Image (cartoon, rainbow, N blue to C red; front, side):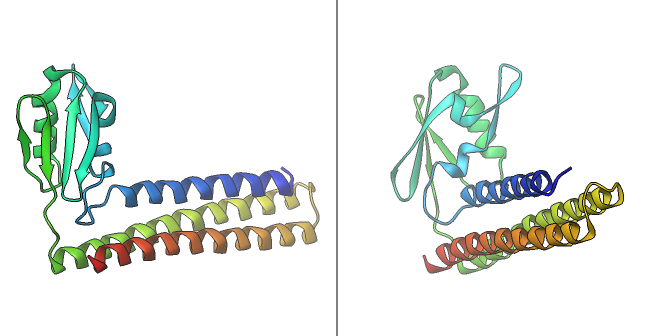
Length: 186
């Protein structure tokens, strides 16, 4: 493998790790209603787990409530059951046509727990990026051993991978700080 191929693969994988973390942050409750809070829920629909966003229209008419309008009224009970069994901590109000969720304000203790959860998730994402760096460094060592590149090219490649890691760790830390501030300021 050439230096460019190894770097491209490492960058692509680090980008995926950062995107997974970003998606995880979107689903966290901040005390403000957002469709992302329920987007990830999987509803048992005709025997197969289906993402809620494929079964219903999800709106936030105001900052404290989420409205879920199923495309098929027959799955209303299934959606309600899924929300009740999830870890959202919200009680669905079913009026026969749609489900309304009230997003309760978060207590100071809940905010602290959420900030801790964000910190742990960001650390997990950083560890994933470090594992990708390790894999890339192994690829450089193997390429040098197989006489596909010189020692200088290998060392240069490893430095570039380290720079890539710093960039992605910075992005992840920035996303985590932003989300933590958003949670703590409300």
